[in-house]
Length: 252
Image (cartoon, rainbow, N blue to C red; front, side, top):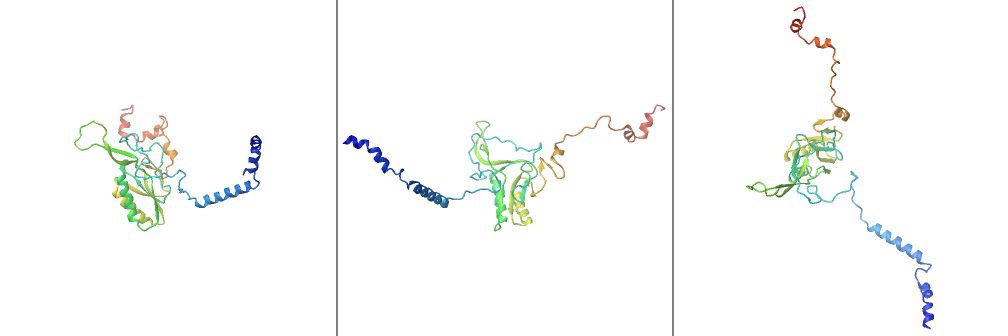
């Protein structure tokens, strides 16, 4: 009796299985559609930057995203004098603040002061401020009256290497140009160095040379040397004084 029941158990299980029910596909489809509807209603839209195709990085622009694995050296900002004009024009905004005198290392506190000066001047206005630099260079220093050697020193602050003709701030909004000029003037006075006001569409800069009426191909072209026999002798004889030519004559 028990053996017969054991033999009939798979058949009984198939008859009682939910998967064999004809209403199972419809129930599964309804449950799946209701789940997708619930997820779509409760889903939060992801924040995207419309002005760039790169992914947005979480964090502060005055601090690096990750700590330094090795203590960075003092270094010098890279000045693109070999034919690159990257970072010298306004990309996202309508107006910009560009360094124009000399490359240097600007601390995060100084950049923050410049940003606060712009925000105070434009308080109550609708605009968007873009920061083109990032303070990701660690500055280390030793205390006063410390002998030479004994290591690099402890961490002091974060800084950014800014090359000459580099755009630091960009602003976009329905604001008068003179108001933006005044805000950028206040920010430039509070930060080290000299800065200039630029607009979108201004000529790029390679090193300290503005490409205003000068193309990149002409700038990269090597300097041509005058061939030895290209100048006719008659043009050089006119520049020689008469006394010198008389002294060089065979009759004298």
